[in-house]
Image 1 (tube, helix red, strand yellow):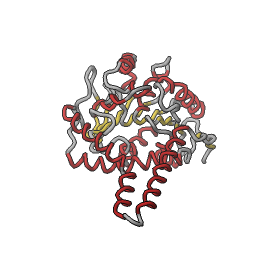
Image 2 (cartoon, one colour):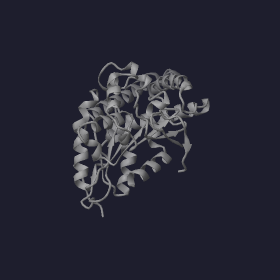
Image 3 (cartoon, rainbow, N blue to C red):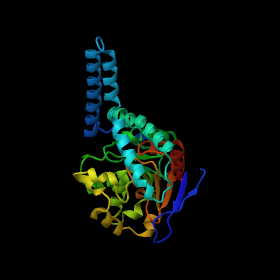
Image 4 (cartoon, rainbow, N blue to C red):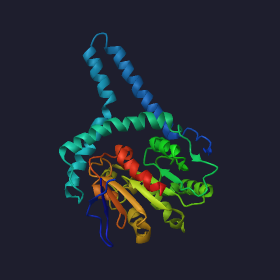
Length: 329
């Protein structure tokens, strides 16, 4: 892993290496719209695969198996499209260029991780680990976890298990409605920050993935909210937009297009003193947020990880260990 901190007035360009009693739980969150939608999609694909197999297997076993393989691996083609454009556009980015081998391994890793998150963890187990607000949490740093687009709190399940094992207070939010302007999520973040601050007596750390980083930044520009947090950690957040944003047609997707007025206005409200409290993790193989340095911020502690794709980046063991150490400080 590489880390860099941008000097005043410059975009980050240099990189250096760093080695790197239980209380109550909050009431379980009801099943949200996204979880129901992803559950229907997953079960629908499974039903189609089984129907195809039942129809063709007796007479055309090869066709039966090929059809099932195409149904369950369709996402791999979309990921390949993203990876191709990512590698092309990153050629002009200051981050170290990924090798072909790194890109292939990143693609394979994302092909496995994406279904685990979107077809298993989020649709069926989004509330498996409830928010943890122990009675004796006073004086212990809390964490508010903010997911990205087309995700829910189930995205964070491996993180929530580790935080729970350490008895560290946390709240993982659900950002709904799914397709909405980023400003519409301010009340959700406000409620989580207020609740965990009341429990611990300390400003929390905001831990964000992808669009969640923009949600946090948008909330921070309201009033004196910058005084109510200890630190912000973003993983693969499109702080300057992403090339894939050109495919967006509404809501938060338009706000993640490169060079849009909303992002420019957001940046204009941020002082260097605030940005020094950001840690921004980014990758030269991020297939969603690219070119790579779009996930960095001036004045922040920008940390490069090599060869990790967008979703799998959030579950890299070394990255998780370093972030968990940081949110515990």
